[in-house]
Length: 220
Image 1: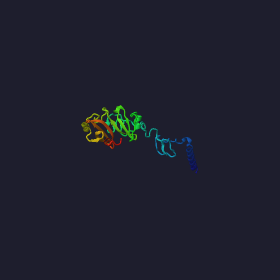
Image 2: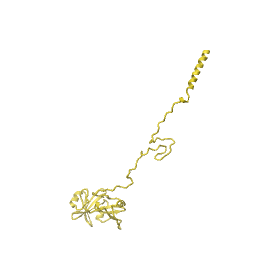
Image 3: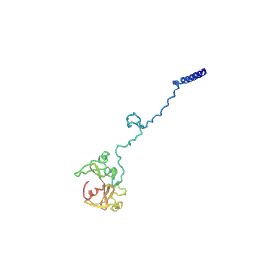
Image 4: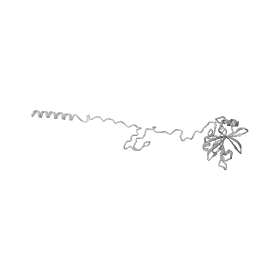
């Protein structure tokens, strides 16, 4: 009996010593939690809306979103080529805004008439073309300078036969001012006025109206 009590006392004493050895200094060191990346958009509870972010998400890192092109809002860059086409020449493109051309110093004084046709003149770099505007937009361009030619090499002074070969799909028109060779190109067209067997004036404008300004003196 005494032996059993002695063993029990030894066991209890050993257990007490083991329990006492675990003090506050023996607690395990807390492990650091992985940080959320700055650009993360993982929903986080309790996070409110902030600039650049959406509700319940962390805002994206600066510069990570779409950017606006630097040229946006600064106006269109006007064409500068001197080749004449059915759409016009240089910045004088059919449909161009009169105000835009004026602010760029590309058109002088514009005068109007009873039909609502406003006329002005372009700069010498592009052959000083005659310009016709309706409702603030460029409607017709008329060139008489020999320095301005089409991509096919047709200009004022070109023989009618050569003009026809350059634009074989065109057709001849007759009007109060004589005859012309008319060639469409998409929604626009070239009208080559003929005098003495040669091109005297080249006009460009909308294909839907350009022929009528020549054959019936209608519109602008």
